[in-house]
Length: 492
Image (cartoon, rainbow, N blue to C red; front, side, top):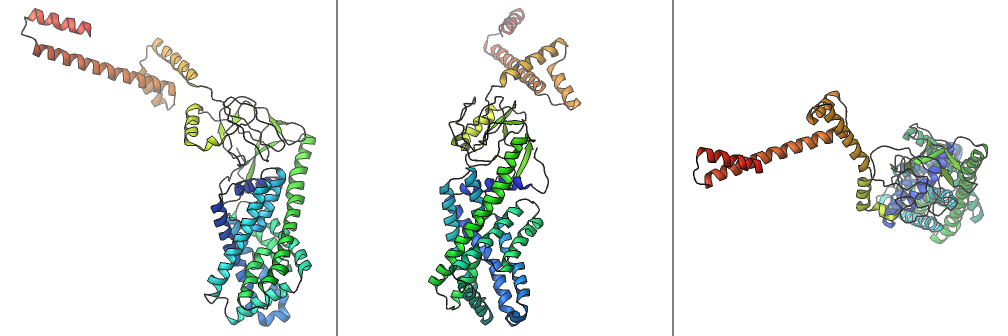
């Protein structure tokens, strides 16, 4: 059983990054687009409050600019909190997820590029819709104070130049990735908000750059008549901020989650032969961040490639392609073999066949550490799959017929009951009174009832045929009638 606490270790949080990226990589195109649109709209909440603070405190900016910056930093985390809780696709956080997963071999470079491009484009598109339709046409940001505040923000950002904006973008996304990483270590929502609040409060107050955050602030300024053109915005703000955010996010992903909390921990654990664990995802559903927990298990490592050999008498249920090992996905099996998977596992016929063949007793969970894996044809008796670095190593389910053992148990019980002179009905009744649950006794009692019903129907049928013969035949003498009935009953 996985522990049910509210906090995760940094190692588990790093694996949660991998598990979440694997879920994001298998999103269908329309799901990825819709999720990116929603993320862009939700994230504008922070920009709205940021602009509102600056616009309404124009008279205090000369003397209390530091306090205004603190207020702006305190309201911006709200938008990111919405994005995280609803599991939508934000470009800057996806830099963290996919970088770690790519290094682990759990996603491909194509998955990374597709996710980054789609999330960036539709984050921008949805933000533009909010700026123009929701805020400007509704009159919210077209007031004089809001107009002056938005123009002031974009002109200040454009005055920094390409290099300064790029350098400000590096720590900007570093802190965003830190917020995403910290919130993966906790489960309660109010603690998640605190973990998100602290890094975002820091980078906004200090004035670092975040490309998606700048979407709302800069587009609102352009719509309100700023002297900064679309071309200047793209060259001086968007492009350098994007490059800086990617550099900062990739650096954070490689240095902290992957190197410190995955590579170093696993190498040290293998070198010192420390207690090992199986890591599984207890939140495997789409549109939510994963939460990886540890399941104690004994296993022997093979070399330094990341492959793991399990020593167990049970195996675990097959995990479909692109899915991190999931808690409580158990099945039957007793061979020390590698997991062999197939896309047919998604078909109802496969699941029905699996339910008909698998036994009902529970088994011990066994999984390998995070990493990508390839699929071969499904082998019911455990054909060994191709071994490659970073694979998930599991076991294929064993499809042994269990009806033989059940039949032998039934025969032995029936023999004991007959030797003791107890009827099957009495055995079933005593089993129910005692509060036990023996399938064999239930089967025996059910078989007895079926035989009794069949015998009763047979006797009723015999009586019916005798009455028909009495009506159809000519009257006989009393002796002849008795003799005929006796012969009929004897034949039946």
